Image (cartoon, rainbow, N blue to C red; front, side):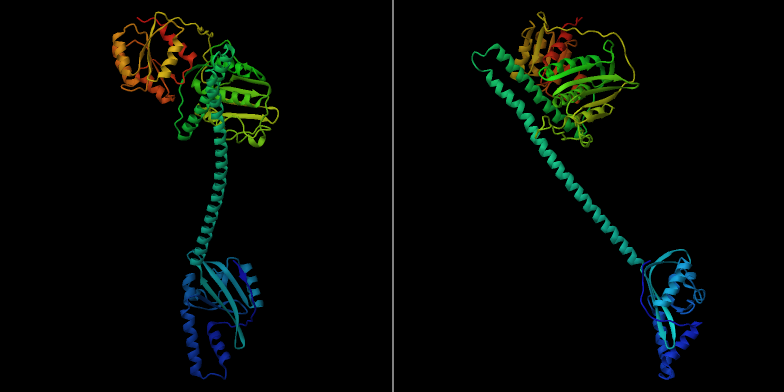
Length: 555
């Protein structure tokens, strides 16, 4: 309750009748004739009775109520005889008697008392908000107190709604400011991302185009030829990695990222990564250490091996990027119900304020003396999404100038242990008694596959669409294997497969396609293809797959 004060004066009467009679006589003594006194009294009573505010008349000395109009009687829901000769706090106008007595003394002293918002309680317990104003008036030779009580429930409600609305508007404004700041930050991040992406695409393209032109030089030495070809291969893989990152982040954003499930030989996967990355760090002052917990055991996990490889590659690529000298270690440890993979380095490390940001899209830790980092800022965001999709978690411990340790887990329920079987390894394939049907509508791809097979002594047949492939299988029972593109004119690979399997049910048919997503792979295998190779074709993988089928004894 807010209280406002000013001055006037007060006296006492004991009853409404005495107050009304005395005040009228005192005020009009020797002035008005009897009929004017009666007229004045009637006019006052009419105003008093018809007022749209509650009115109470109090005895100045005692504070007892000596009169009350019908509006206040209705407002507090008490009959008049229960109101007269009562104190204000006895009819629910004040909740605290001690405070009310002090306020009454203040009223007697100052002549004015006001509460802008006072709750009063009705007989049924309901609360009404009122504005409460008391004034002391001289009436003839006496002082009286008149209290006006105005119901302000609607005003309080309107004020509350207005305040609530103002709060809502303020919150909206705050949200808009926050959204604006985030949008500006997002724009800056996207601008940096696009700049980096342009850099990441144009850099390998520059090498591919430039060194491809060098290959056309007459009398090119063998050493230079080998050097240029290696640069073109490395740059092509770098460009493919950028494209794969863009595709993966798009899948993550759209919720289309899928995970395969198969038994993965962990030691074999780690060995392959060790060989690959040893070559990559050979030219740097960095030592690569691959640590295997059980190097001579067969450790198998049912998971997506390609995605595990992708996460480790992302972490190793970052370690190589930010480690100028020292060492990079990677490996795994087996816990009770999960396997933890890790990549540690002695590189530049990460400042504490950046640790919470590095797994966000487009975020990069700026290297010292560098305005634009290598990379597109997607690697760690993709790694986090993949690990979580695999059912694990990923984190990092790092100190600036000392190095970083990234670790992630995947579920591991049962350990399958046995002797490691060394895979059959050879670069010299001899398939002189085999015939391979190449079904491919792109001339360059066709030529590439034939070139890969040129040293294997295999016989090859060419088909440029699915319809030709079916006819060749009908007319050439010596065909040992079909390498089938999926997207072709006339008849696609899926339709051609069904017809070929009707002719030769046991003939191995391997899909090779630029559709690299898991749904395409699932459809191909479910549709009857014996295996699936994605473009750009990994020559080593293709030769291994072909050898597996061509060395099988068909009955």
